[in-house]
Image (cartoon, rainbow, N blue to C red):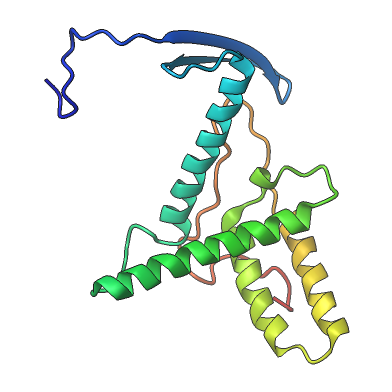
Length: 178
């Protein structure tokens, strides 16, 4: 028996859903086994896509925001550090969404690592801006740089490759401003 109380001979009732669809010019087949009582297979595939996005977001947080390496020692400090990392993630994702709004750019095709650097530097510059016009110019500049930080489409991969920040300062400058 496993830690969940099941053995290899136990039977699980469910159904297998095989769905083919066109994704970026390629026919993709998804095989899903489920115990959920959802009648529409398309709805189940959509649910799976949402879950996959959550998994990708958790992976991004662990890698880009160093979520798996908490520096704090006390419980309260650990909670604050994790909260701040979630906040940084959500701010960056929000700015990515604003940057690609009213375009045909898929926000998941934007490099989170580059967007995070652009947002961090842009918000620092934004806080020092003196006029509303300067602040608006900084925001528009951030949006332009984020829209340019697209991950290229590479057929045959199960998910887009992410850009990893190995050392601070190793990326080419987005511009002299940020």
